[in-house]
Image (cartoon, rainbow over all chains, first blue to last red; front, top):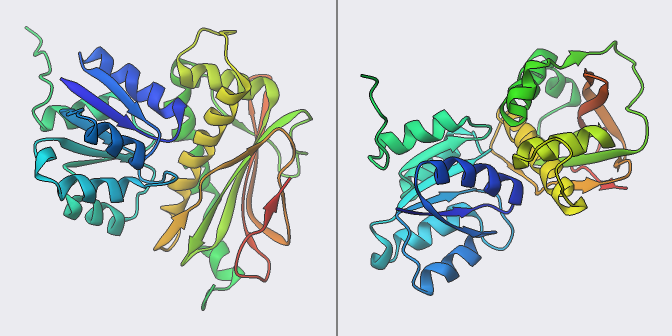
Length: 127
Length: 169
């Protein structure tokens, strides 16, 4: 499985990278939506994108709409990971095609729970 | 700002809510270190001594305001190490500190934005190794805090009379 982490903060990319690497994902990173779209146009097809909302050049919402408008990328799972906590924003992102929405700050458990709901990771059941 | 007064904005934001946001963000980002609690200092406690890292983020829309945080330099480095998953004293650059402190104010600011009326938009964070100055600010909340031997301060404010917040160093 391959995850593309899209956030203008290197610190946040580092935090997310540690979490999803431990889950066995290979990682690519982009500092904004435009950079991420370039990676996709160049042939990267991640299974999962973790997307911040507020970024320079192209925000996460625009990235989601652009990805969802292109049939080549239909199978990519999109998860917003953002400080945007207004109900209207959450509804907007989900309506645009994001599969899940995580509000910062988050614990690693919160990310794992969402990925489990999406069927992207399987939690080990204690014997 | 249409139809909103500074008084009504004061009513909309409680200090307890802001403390709760800061504690949650701190606990999440500081990980194991967060077992050492943030201790509120007495009102009127002066801002942390220089040198400090200051960061600010503005909210524009149905609510207009600014969220600022000031961290003693040693604390800013500690926060950076914790957020980047480095060992204490681990090698990091000034750019790393700017990015980590910026993300800290971004997440605190985003969560405080969730406490006030929307819709509104969060700016990108501004970070400086110098005091960030804001013209004509009415402080709604000022939280002087201690974490171990370090001090930090958080301010939430609104413009005194204008429609937007002007920020500079």
